[in-house]
Length: 396
Ligand code: 3PG
Ligand code: MG
Image (cartoon, rainbow, N blue to C red):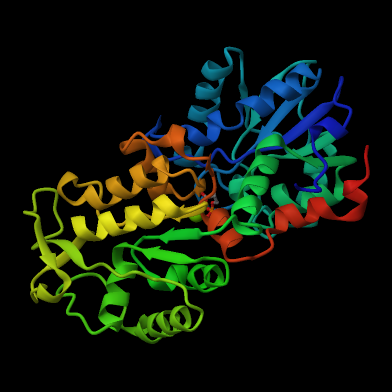
């Protein structure tokens, strides 16, 4: 269990509480495509309000140019949505850096923290201003905890009291359970398009896992490393030596990286592409691998059935196109049906979980994308580390 100080350790009655959340949600125009990250903070907000505090919410959205307001990155639609979820007013405060007027029990949202100069570079002057807005700073933004910025890191140094929010603590506890002390056998599933973006994750996982299931473009690079023709499929020639090294390491350590034995190919990357199942030795030069085949999916499902711990990041195929979604679907159901402690994270993984309706049967679904991956890489998350400094751990 985490040693972080939580909101139960801090007196919140009558206090001005500044909460860093991650409301960096996908939007199409001003419509929220997925509000998981917002909903995940509702228990925190209820908790803090019930304790008698008034609340300022601070978040980023997108990657705007610092120092400039822009409509596409405004938190206005988020404030409106939160207001309907909480069934109370949530005013958006545009001009907040020098002070915010709050009535007892108020909930307000501070406009995108990345509109402020100094946020990205974690500038002290901005961090001090943030700290002086509040009596207590609460970080509940696990998904931004890999960023050392003024609102996630610097502010903690200057706030009179600072602690971790319930969501941040739940995330760290779930990931630590899966990753630091995994019940065996442990299976990691790493999909996605590129080995290069996940190489450190793959290397770091090797010391923990018994089986590593790879999918997507990552699997193509491994197939190529084993001498198979992958046709026109996405793969990374430069990463073939790294893939070979991981395969060798697995062999030496008697761990398994089972590669696909069959795949589903198309001739073009399109939702209308005709799907053709093939043995991996029969891939043509003009083929695109878009999913693992049914025999591979069956084998992966058997591995998952035996697992006691599962960590999942990334789909096996182009599941957005139904004819190439079977591999990811079989895998999602196998994770859900297994008795293992299962943790999943990353945007595409969450879409797959929601498409195949298995959310209730995954033990923990992380709100983190980049932060989830950095945790799996074994990196220290700076926004968490700063909350672990001795003076921050003392009870307020
Ligand atoms: C994320 O979506 O991964 C976080 O909100 C962090 O966003 P960033 O990558 O723009 O820092
Ligand atoms: Mg990101």
